[in-house]
Image (cartoon, rainbow, N blue to C red; front, side, top):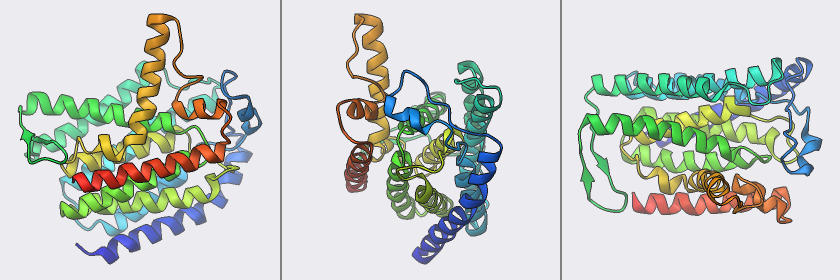
Length: 319
């Protein structure tokens, strides 16, 4: 596989994001698309109120242009990757739009968001099934795989896509946190895709790397723009789709270790409070726990980046 093509895709996507951001940020500010801060969050975040959000448009725009430009193979994998990324991004966009325009802090209802995610996950399943996609699932670090047929596999990847997109969404809570962690995860999956000789998946990962790094220039602390659900759900859809088309479904649990921890912290917090009436963490997702424990926002972000890098390395070793 052409390594130079991957680097070129990253570079072009990065430049597109860096060019687009200064154009979109003032526009978002003029349209009063500012972030609303929930009162129960860390008090230090109140000063972020009004910072332009929906910056995920920048990510998705740069990603889409670069992906369409450099992914020459218009096969099933290409359409799966594009539909998962843009479809989940669209659900996030609608969620952000409702939050901002209608002043509803929670955006789409849980059922509406679930319906949108299920719709695009179902389209992905249909495309894969029509193309005879393998229903075998490999266990990372071993030669063991199991194949229980489509009756198990397709419901499994629907649940997987929902879980990954929401886990990624939970990770978006601090300046630069998700941008950096996702760039690392996409970097690892780009290597996985090249080993699997899936050009569309490799180009998709590369386009996302460039887009989120370009966005990070403006999203690093103190952030000039937030990505909102438009970006986080789009990123989650892309990661899930790459894992699926490269047949590394379970490898996400390692490469995306930070996302898994963030999701588990929320599940454990809610479960503990409902069952025992007590909280395990000072606040969930877990990055807020460290903030409320006295860590600076930048320290939390850099630590999570470092841990994400370790998880990515372990994942590539197991691959």
